[in-house]
Length: 509
Image: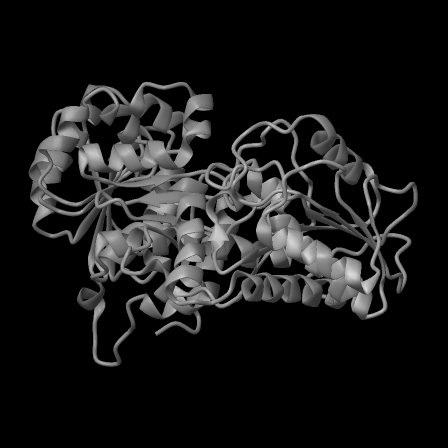
């Protein structure tokens, strides 16, 4: 599990490292620049290699442009230029003609002057193999105008491998918003911790590949303040419940799936099958009678129970004692019988609930049901469903992505998995996980049903819902990534994602 920070936290960690621990700011600046130089050297030496984009017309060129601002981000850029120059690269360093320099940046400029390294005020009209953006760091909070806007526009139009120092200039470090214009990076080299705005869209589209470099700021620099935002890594897969040699199907929990109105059997299938693939011992699917034959063919492993409108509540209550967790909502519809089912599950089951799709659309009309529930609830809305839950338009939800999830989670005491290209999981205690796995091929019908089943499978095996939610999202994305790597992202289906789950978990437990 890695920490993510906003601009305030990063500035405070930087300050604590310098003022409390006594690490000179120039030392941090030198280490940051070394990390950037390391990545640039790797690119130039291995153009077209693993982890880098192949660019037509590239050879072993060493022309590097570094565009610097007046703050400490610009100071980082000046050091990058100096170190590359000392290594024999052909370096052009650009700094606008006017601006109030930070103390550290002024010192770095003086150092360059003593070496005789020239600094120009405008970008020369020539081609560069690498273009380095060190104009603005994480402190930018206004739209870019004038010379700075012109510089970024020109850098974006230039050929060459684009490298951003800490964050692409023009991006808001906390929200990922573009402030008028932003540098379009192929690679962003950020320091100590990744910044939240690099993972949120549209920021993620401007950041390119993200490399986090250690510069001497670590957990000690928080000085007791607890980080609140995280993302999972491959190492966290060890937290998935392990399998035991001496066990049976009852050892791995029982998932009750309430899903699928007439002609929506697929939603019930994907949810139930994903729960099995994630390790659940038993799955019972409760659905409308019209889905019986289809589900018996698609999912013969499951216990199947069908309902009619008049008996849905009674049949659910009879199954509560059997189940370990309930996955409710996929394809269930929004008619009166579906509403009765969701209300019964939330208010009377006493079981952990994963609420998705139609279940969320029903809950949006009865938010008091969420408050009355006396159990753990994981909700999994996409942007449209979240907009209905919070009575906002989708654009506003997008613009306030983290805050919307965080506020709803706290107000209704639910775990909110807000789905987007980079899904966010918000807990009622204020902690947030941002997901980094997954790909655009997963934007396909049924993908959300698979996620619901994965979450239910993890909870069924005893994983606490607050741990299962970010882990399930991470597993879901990894399953899609494995399949996209083998089949390509175009045409990826929910069935493909299903088949990717066992591949992710093959070596777990």
